[in-house]
Length: 532
Image (cartoon, rainbow, N blue to C red; front, top):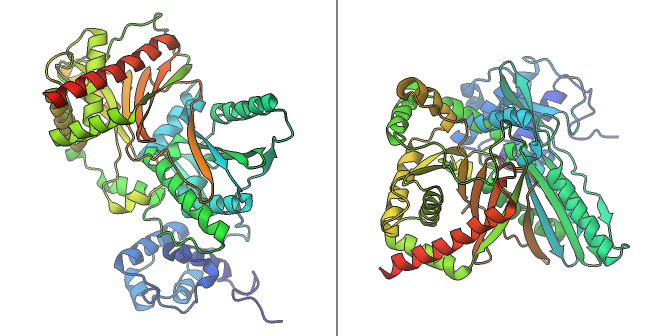
């Protein structure tokens, strides 16, 4: 009987090497491994100088040995690469199934940070990014499972665990395999029991910590709640995603489900960058002189600004925070969102600047100070390849807002826009500035600012799986990363808002009042600025 194209596993010493290389080539071209002919030219397949460099870098990383670029250009075939490497590397035992380590790379700065703080946090479930996706219609569960499997194959960050490496961290990328997605059928329960069971499942999903060092940073549950209603509970660890990534994941999931249900190839473009490549890019960007210039910028920009907002508390701040928290949800209606966007256009800026200026004014009035500072996030996706990267890339940094309490709101918006742009050009986390502030200014800076703000314009909270009605709801655990974080996400023509707060400091009614005050202030100030 003729052997399969790859031959039996022990046919010759290069079989395992070829299999590993074939997987790298297939990923580069976005095809299945068995679609690649061993003698086909890399460049005839559509490769070019950049993709060749990327492939050779992956080969060096995968096999731990140098591979000459000149040699690759001279013989750009899978067979030639296999022959070259078969005698240069020791082959691993034949055990490379799903879940085993595919390759190892240094962790990104964000992965390392989250791995460190996860281990130290009293309630690590605070780092869960949990979604409840309600689906109505004739769901093809097998197609959904296929879509999720393809999603994990495409994005290494969804199959990565983090591990200690000396005094740092590294990422262990696991080999892809089928994503298990058993159906939990709740249809036999009475209406009230079914609703309670669904709420318990959602709370359990949001409140169960995902350990980024213990396995892949994603958990899934699919529950059937009626003849044509389903709920997908999807949880990611924050080390593997940010707002941009969640939007990307939802868009790709919808596209992959549609093509899987139709039985046709998905046609999505190859992923432009994986977390390992992003980590290498970060290291290449390291520049001590540039960092020192950034530090000097921040010493000047933050001079005299209090590093705590000083909001009134419902109870004294404990010596040791418990991590307990809650989340208040609120809505900015479509007509107010439209007004915010109109003012942004008039002032030549973005809705972020308008909404951040409103928060600055709210905080300044609440604490009785003219100047406040709060944490904002920078996407860190300066390269086109990073647009398709499913990972956490954000850097948080301080946004000082001076003379925020009174005066022209249009002028305040202009100042916030200008300051935010300057700060983005010099983005450094507060913890990187703290030593210099202490040494050169004698000012003690907290490791984390007490108030944060996020305008997640890249996160589309709406996704449409073909043939199904789809509703996406954020599930917040009963924990808080900071003392108070305000956030806005485009949704349904308006903005979906949240205020995550520390239960050590405030009762829910207090934060609900601030959320109402924020929407009222935003409406009043934006209306006056447009009329003026």
